[in-house]
Length: 141
Image (spheres, rainbow, N blue to C red):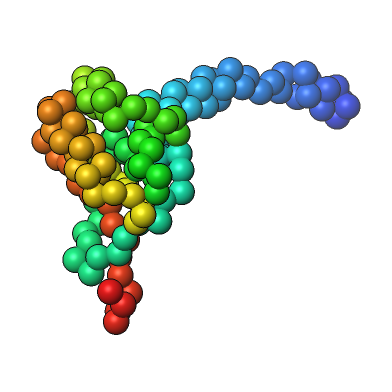
């Protein structure tokens, strides 16, 4: 007669699950997603943008520069001098030569400050410099 308990024990002992290849695949996927992910950069302050009915959405901006209502210039959440804008843009363009610049100016900021920032970006070599605006609702200026 066949010994049923002995055959069951033999099956239990020989059954192993090797998870090393599974862990390797998880790490490979993690590395892949980290390498291919682009991180969103924020200006660091809340800005009340002026609205425009002809505003066009821009897909990706690598450099965001904010101008607050009191004409302070912010890059990556830090206040910088307006003379340092060119250096920051040159450094960012060295990392990504095809990058574009978006100046996010507050509604209460002076136009001259926004123009100076945009001029510094152009002098730094940025070919695509845009001024951010909110989209106006229908019937509103």
